[in-house]
Amino acid sequence: MHVKAVVTDWWLGRIYATALQKTTLKWIVPRPDRSLPHSIWRACQGKPYMVEAANTRARMITGRYRTKQVNAKYSKHAESPICLLCRVEEEDMVHLLVQCPKLSQPRTRKLEVLMSIYREDDVRPPQTPAEVCSAILNGVCYTMENMNGSDCAVIDDCAVNSVYELSPVLHIQASSICNIICHKLHIVRDNMINSHYII
Ligand SMILES: [Zn+2]
Image (cartoon, rainbow, N blue to C red; front, side, top):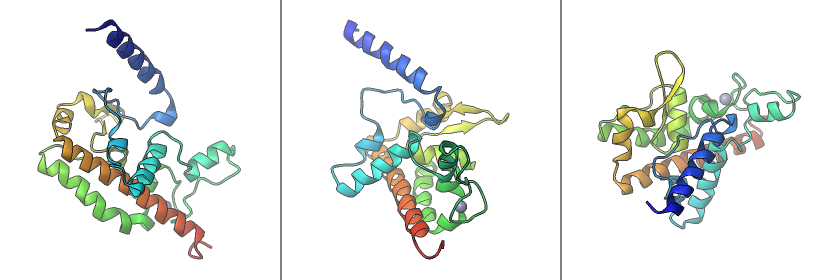
């Protein structure tokens, strides 16, 4: 291997290892092939709406999206972390993307399309709310929760090989669906918060 490639790979590995210690980046599943742009961006295909959608998902996966829980943390709990839509649970990324009952209508159909990809490829689908959240944020690949409740990356599981063997077209299609889920829920959430419904 060329020296430059070895050095680049070493630094990328070190950056990944350091970045993944940050709690804000806890959702990111490391990718085996770092030479390609993340599927978030490859799913844009030059369409303005899809670029917006990709931007929303990128903010969510990198911890830059301001959920109520994040706002509470940065306001030193001057702000409530409780979801403004259901007013029952704290709004973190899992609640927003998977659990909030007020967002079930815009979420359900797209999520079914995403789940059908696992079924078609005979891959274990994400099952817990955290796994589904991870799948939406990473675009098919997800972090699996093990029997002890701690996390292990699906990248180390045999199932991940099947996930990564998806055809490039299907992989981009899945990532595109994930971008849309994130953006759609973000838009609906904002509209509901800004409407008289909440007031
Ligand atoms: Zn809620």
